[in-house]
Length: 255
Ligand SMILES: Nc1ncnc2c1ncn2[C@@H]1O[C@H](COP(=O)(O)OP(=O)(O)OP(=O)(O)O)[C@@H](O)[C@H]1O
Image (cartoon, rainbow, N blue to C red; front, side, top):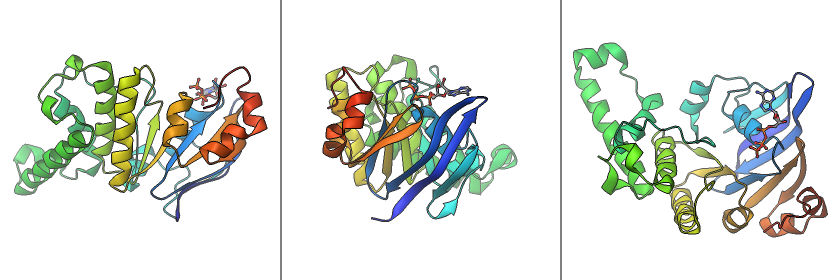
């Protein structure tokens, strides 16, 4: 499969701390990749570099063959990378559907003038936003709750709503930061099926996740970070057997 995302010797420092060092990593089109590692290993920092929140100190990020290093977050989103965050970031007083529509803003071109004048192009655009948002809700199984206030959803549903919002941007690559955090086993099962369904639609997925069972069950390939350095990379079964990974997770079960 062609490589969709590539990090080439990506390094990022915060003052004296090297948070990620010389990271080489690839995500192939159509795959589910995972980035794992103990607390503070640098996983979220990698997501923040890919999405343009941080500019790497050294190295390069390539997406669909284009160098995206140092581009602004909105530019990266409009090229086709969307993400969710570790903590829930919903507008709790808005409806479920409106929360998803917000995720679509990067694809909307009408601007404030068009919105105020109710230009016909804007009406068409609003129709597209509604349709795309509804299909994102369908993918995460929340269609029936579209008119509910986000605050009334269960925890697992709120996390799925965040994924729908990211999907509304019609990403080619979806980054999920600890999607299973805080979920019960039933919610994790639903989430896993949902991620597989999203992949079926052609979206490539990269996740950061602490739940090893979840990672090992769903991933095509796994990269392991420890103290900002990549210590292993491979299929789930290769990574689980890797002595460096076992040492990094000493005392914890990998898989
Ligand atoms: N903006 C920042 N300024 C200074 N240091 C930072 C910043 N962001 C991250 N770090 C540091 O970089 C290192 C990597 O942090 P990061 O959050 O990427 O790890 P992580 O693997 O995602 O951890 P966790 O699993 O706990 O979320 C940590 O030592 C962290 O304290």
